[in-house]
Length: 373
Image (cartoon, rainbow, N blue to C red):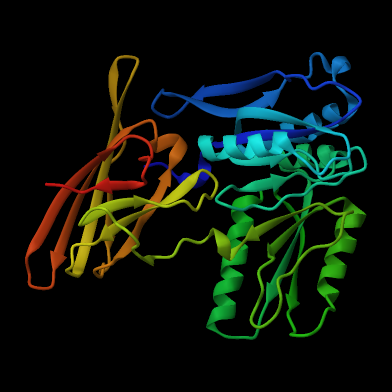
């Protein structure tokens, strides 16, 4: 299977337009290229600004911010929605965009959080939909330069009391930032020592000042609560930022089963992270699996020729009865186009073995897949 971090992401784009003008469709083009196997693959989408003089000014500003973001993140636009802002708290277009994001298993991109018709809007990710809100349109040039690796960036990490847990959290912050950052111009790294009950953040003040001076993008290691402290909620608006790591993005290695319909099954989880969902091996057989392994291979026909993925092989630890163990990240955009055969081998405590197979193309409607003989 391919590197999941490198692939394109499906995106639903949500524009916000002043109520004085009528909504319209804005043309978008998806760029394609052949991969190492000569198979056409989407690179990213971009909105066409050839008729920009007909666009409302706030929409043009949003498109100028969206296009470099799509290029930098390899975003492929699945659908667009435009909210006509009239000062009402109702947002029918946003509701439709959320439903589309669920249906398309896509990231929902809100093009601006700035006030439109007197209202700001910055929704949070929830109910399995990852929502990303772009910084103000005035930062479009900065994002465009970031995509080419020229924009200066600053790293801001948060540390708790010394110990193994603190070291692990710092490693996760650095790893998350490295995955998100595409600029080679790192100005500095600041580390804040979190103190329970204190709101003072001297290292953050230094990081923000450096960002302000150099128009740099700030990478925050995490906004999660550390130790007994509270969640960090950035309240500044003059510096754009991205968050490297959130605990909510982690998938547990073992989960308790609830209403598993088969003795042995594969379970497709709902926690969506950048185009991937967790795939679990579920054991509802009544006997513990001392060890298990899962092999997989996908196949499809492209241009009349059979195309196969490389053989995947994952050795798992014990899978207790009534629980499920994480197998891998299932890439919805890539693997969903292939008919994938999974072979499961498990060893029970009494020394007997269990072998089964399952076939799938896309995510089953029930999210459960029978592993049979």
